[in-house]
Image (tube, rainbow, N blue to C red; front, side, top):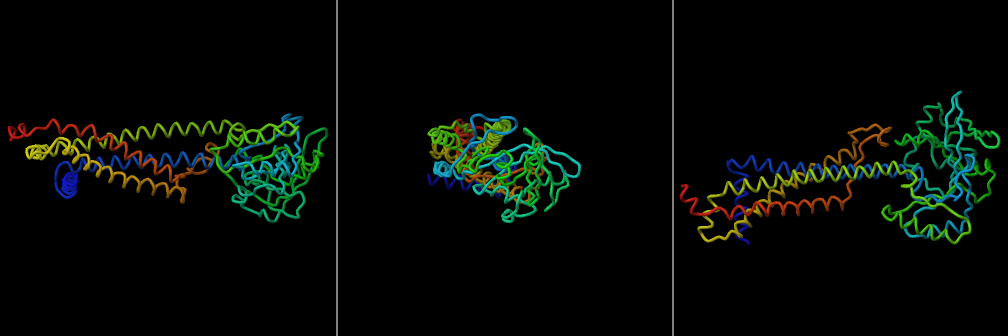
Length: 408
């Protein structure tokens, strides 16, 4: 084996420093492998990035799991559920549940500067997790809300459209048995790239909704549960159902994927596109590996004949060219990783490729490459490369010393 590795390394040095006609072809093969791996890295990063960013925005406005009344809607107002602190603690102890928060929702009409806009008022209390909106606040502060009556946080899109500014008052109208009006003051402005939600959602204290609906202290529209691990979402949903089954009240427990299936169906289509790209790039890389292997063998026919005349077996000669091919695959993978990771890093930090947020829910191409995906892709590339060189290596068995002597 040491002899085979020595010969293979000697051949590789000659290719890198000599003037053999196989040198350009080998470079093309290495380039093909590098480009194929780089495209695969970028494809995975884009798909994972899209799913990660869109999911974060959807769950930021809502949550992973929503618990609401089994009766659902009644005259534009959702039937409330009564949730005591003991129930919050019980649900919070369920494995994979990170946060449990009471929320209230009430549709209304915004009036500002003689313009009207349909909105969804979302009320929150002290159980609410502010992480999502805290990162996206462009004006105002979450910490300044305490002590302010009828405060409201609106989106940048809504503020521009309705000419709202910080500390400016506006009126919301609510339709029910009779028309009700409430005055609010803008204490914060957030900005996301999710236009469908930006144009309707206003945040305020849940006490406002309780007053409008004449609800009790512990009543709310729904419970929102945030989870730690997205993969265990369905298991967590079942655990929540089991925990709530002990109550006399009937609940509906839904996941965000069932609330907005159109978005997650679109994200699932991205997986199919990524798989197609991976297959195509694997085929391209495989073709480059096979062609490089054949060129290496055909350029060394006289050397193969000489080795056989000296007593070398077909197996040992095959090992020489397999080892040499693995060197080429290694160089291709090295440059492919460098190229792919650099391009992903540039897009991650500089966001050089923009997108239409109204169509794609984000204003740039989001990229994110988990380490386990990158490792799995490289391992898969090595395995495919090794399988690809085994077949073409059998060509050495058809080269015989006699034929070479006659040709000379």
